[in-house]
Length: 416
Ligand code: GLV
Ligand code: MN
Ligand code: MN
Image (cartoon, rainbow, N blue to C red; front, top):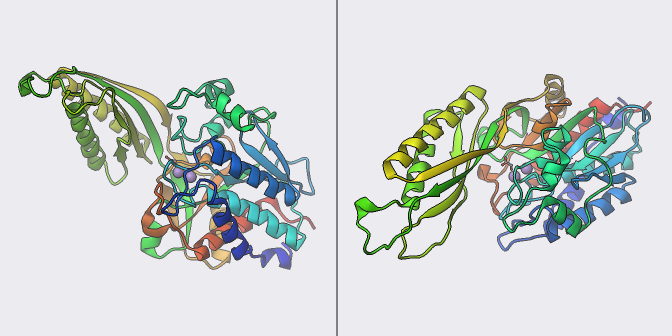
């Protein structure tokens, strides 16, 4: 690598500026962001991102699921690019960094290479994946899952949000149903920078997480059918209360996850009473379950024990409970050569670092099933994420972007 390339540093103020500039698209009062995938604010940030990439000389194309690809040519165009990026959608009450850091740091890497006049041997390509978050349409990370062939494009296009709007209709409404078939843009490897979204790096005073693995995920849709009746006149022993049933299921999930801990988590994040009324015993409830582990055997145990617990609770309470598995993502073991490349970049740049397992799901986990992938983590304040209060320091974001850039340079090579 040339001296210029090996000493290269991203422009910290410029990266920080873009993070705050784009945070205005869907800004919330507490300093967070609400930018649901394929909504009006997502269109705003996508348009901003497209313009910024084109101004940096990149060729932008969009696939039929709306994922955006911005290509920077390399000397050898016969080889697929090194991919880098993340997502720009957020949770309904999300922060400024989840996904945004990785996507805008990728843009910052390109701007830095442009300023330094560096041509890479292999091209590089920034990606903004559609619907990483999964809060409007399930599953999370659906575009990268379709990219690796876990779902067909047609299946994903037909998924509906809570209002019955399909992914296809939502793409059309913001003008982001692109022309490129899903999977046509090839990559030789993929690197994603992200905030940790957990407490480990901060607690240990480490700047960089070298992500070598990721938790597997189980998502379920559940439904409880009891019986609506009068809250005043129905004696307690005669009730078939859906909400009391859910309460037991929530506590069973918690108990099971704790039993398999620390390598297991379980959450019931949504629950909707069908016809809520103060003086009616709830008769019908829809709920969701999210449970995760980095160990495939523990994932099987979580599934089995949750089903057993629900069977016992529903029989005793004389209610019906259905539990449909809507998504199963096995644990991820990132490509060891790429993980080593991230570690070497962190070491060479002099940052404290440690190997780490991702608690959250990421598009890089999907990509790793087909191409070598890896991730770089930086700390976030108090480990808080999926919250408006999510925060990270400029110094840590800059460090992560520099590790991203030097990993990409090592993979893509510098044209001589
Ligand atoms: C993605 O944000 C996840 O749920 O891990
Ligand atoms: Mn994310
Ligand atoms: Mn997220």
